[in-house]
Image (cartoon, rainbow, N blue to C red; front, side, top):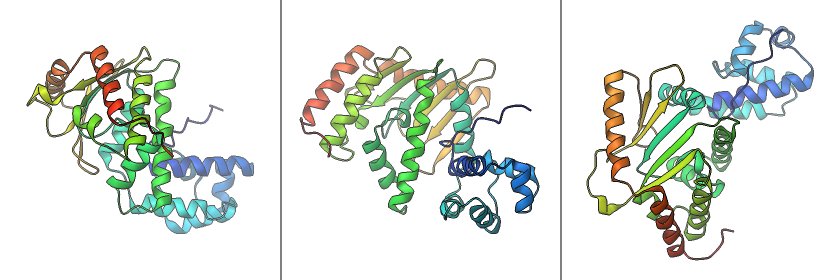
Length: 280
């Protein structure tokens, strides 16, 4: 029998639900077929739930919660998945990101998720999604932090980030959180696969203004571009000519940015401006 497919709980809330379901099923000592028979539903639907490719109807989710002794955890997760389904572009981006051998990003608004501290991520999530409860924010923060394992793999992707000066200057969560975040950014940039550049205001108008641009490269597949303009304004670009144009935009931002070495010194000075206090 082949080993079970690896799950990525950070890919989406549906994937987080599926990961929890598999853990509960394995803890109970049941196969997918045995659990399906208890519901009862076809065992291949249990597989789809666990992979995050399908979300069960509420009555089935409630039945799974009871059978597996989840004490309401699956039911609570189900409500989050149902209320905030991810966009197709967001889901596909997470799939591509996990397979990429190189990721080039221009960020106009905030530190990229793979380089965020917990405190910074919590502040961003709570402000971008103000209708979320505190528990929902914590779930999203946990998923984002789990996704950072991409940079800790045995063969991590090249991760090259160009940050608009706004990202460094804007006080997200207050001076202490920003100082901690910038220190983390500097530490991350010492890894051989991570490069960080700052695009200062002095560079003036540039081609990537208006949204954030991500370019993903793969071993045996064409490049893909991902555009972000806010919490729910995302677009995945796969057509070759369109991807080339987005790459051109990124290249202009990259060329206008400070070198990695100068960027590090610039970030150090920004840290000093945020003061010396530590986050509580």
